[in-house]
Image 1 (cartoon, rainbow, N blue to C red):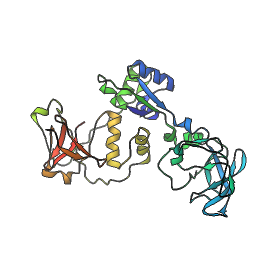
Image 2: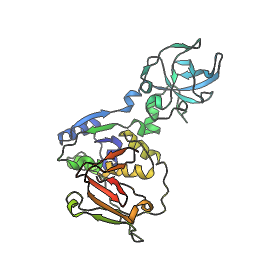
Image 3: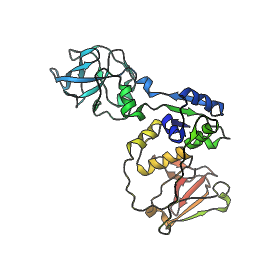
Image 4: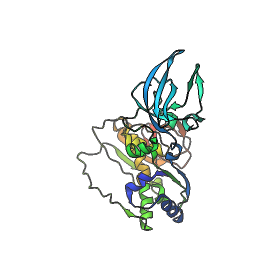
Length: 321
């Protein structure tokens, strides 16, 4: 189970240090398997400013840039299409390890001209998959540490990720809310209120739900709600950052919000397109074994006998849980 420190603090009001939280988790039986602090791998990157840029005399796609850094004016050869005078950039000086390309930067010659560092893209720093150009910062002072700029302006990028082991007797800890509740009970803080007023339905549900009698022990209840007027698209940046931090790939608003609540509240969710539910009914049943269905990752899966499946008139649509 993975979660970020800020995600935990969305549920837990606490002044406890990271070390205190890690100790308490293990003491509660939630063994800490790993801690990833993105700030550590970014600690040596600094902020610079391109004060001059001109075309490389022997390469059409390269530019020779003069970059103001904490060490003074530095010459860097760059092939990014947005390398130009006036932009504020992230610099890896000689000796700095760049994780996205698994390389330690050195001094070298590129087409006969010396280069004393590198201006980085987000992918090269493992901040995102963006690699169409180098990072252009909207602010920042020359020589400041980039990680300090992130902590102030985009803290999700340097959020500590905690991974804990979950034993079969602790399903309550499969959600961040449950972990926060446990820590609060131990005295490490106060559980934040998350009460919401119920929203009454305004029209009948067009989808019937049936649970087979022999499946009631696995799925005693099925909750669903029809929402009209939904426009799907990319999810907001905060949600994408939250999912990417724990190793999930953002897909769309509807998929991402269900994945978020699966981890946030330990409530596995799935979105169905009501217009595409064949027969206007969903059946919750035990798989006979051998049925196949295509999941959201576009991969086809074969069900094992006894798995709890959710099907419409055309076949399996989803797995329960």
